[in-house]
Length: 158
Image (cartoon, rainbow, N blue to C red):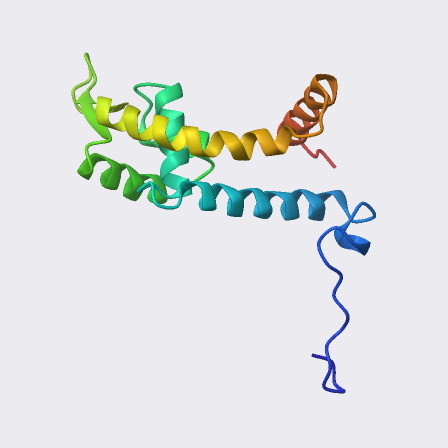
């Protein structure tokens, strides 16, 4: 609130600086928050949170990944991934196995039950993914994908 006791007029999503005239970084963040909310809604009732879904998805894509690998792949902290993996292991969605040569190294794998759970969740989030692509041509989608990867890999050197 301002000093006079009333708040500023805040534009709705898509208007003013929250629309096409906004800063790109802000618009990326705004879109990310909306996407996260849509994903959480799609996953409601599945037994998986969005971070658990992310870890399970990455583990299915990269079998045998370590906890540190999963943290990097899932964009989560190692501590968060450690808790998530323990919960997924407790629910029998993932299993640990010792490294063939270095017994102290632990690899993680999705179990058959975890693969079934992931498939059920994937069926729900496919609609969210389709909504992201709605109205985009294949060429537009390719340009956006390329740009997002460039944003993620570009290093500021100044």
